[in-house]
Image 1 (cartoon, rainbow, N blue to C red):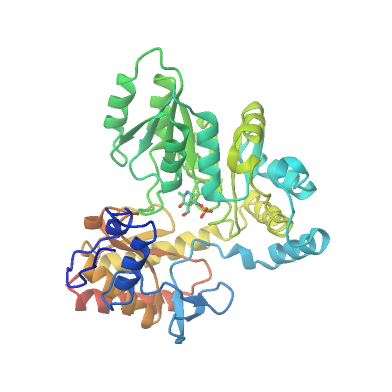
Image 2 (image 1 turned 45 degrees about the vertical axis):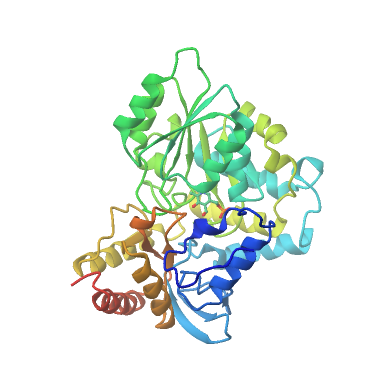
Length: 423
Ligand SMILES: Cc1ncc(COP(=O)(O)O)c(C=O)c1O
């Protein structure tokens, strides 16, 4: 096993991804263990932390050393905290009583019940599409959809900021993968223009709301280019569903192009507050996915309790009654406070607010100190973004009060001043 030089201040995430010469596959796990026990800050100090109560604006956390403390929760993807809505909870409980904890089989082998069918119908209606398919995992939705529909004769064009699960799905498909710099529509057109005419299997994939920046893909331009170059379009709206668009139908509604999206993918784990993912599309596409998407075909169906709760969630979404406007007002309030203090918060159009730090060492300290002072935010650096674009990532939650937001901002601003992020 190679010796890890802890004094070397440039130890990176990537140093532990490869088995080195003469190493067994487990030696890198031992090298990582030495680093994590060394006391050198790596941004992983919260590893092993647990939540002691259900999600709310104020959560009690237990650190890995047993220390318990309260935090203002600015790091949850459950923006609407809809999982704790009384209607959603009681629907989930009813389903739990009726069908038990697990379904015991994959969807195609009697692993689903009437609730799964009802949820899929609701999702299809929400997107005004013919059909939809629900997967047991969000990550697995992208892997399954992309690898089922694309293969070595196809070309997939990605925004560089797309989620890891999209890239993994692309890799698995064996298709040719092209990438354009984040949001650069000229570059996208350059790529499209160069695709040989006889290559008809073309798919543009983009996050709807980008998970690390909170901005929305330019779907108005993307759908026009797709039409011009005969491309299909897939949107992963994990962070847009229920949150953006005139009535919360997501990023495509924001640009009024819902009818131009071929594959409406989103996760049931963020705004919808539960677990899983789906693809809403034409009937024959969904039918194909039920047989060829391996993360559907070979994976046990979602628990009925999750599905039962989600049916209520989509009921609330349908009537735009889940608290989206309150969430967005509070997000604006937070953004203004941070911007006025001098932070660079990018150009978010959603409930995700990046706070750019640009210096990983400062980021590690900020993350640790903010949490211990009572503000929970997420830490984002490589491999989620480039190291030089490292940041804190704040997620607004509807249930936070203006007093919570004021208090959190006060602490973040004081730390920002202390570390010279703002002046
Ligand atoms: C854009 C995007 N797609 C897919 C996923 C995966 O979803 P899940 O966490 O439900 O597996 C995430 C979650 O981080 C995401 O942000």
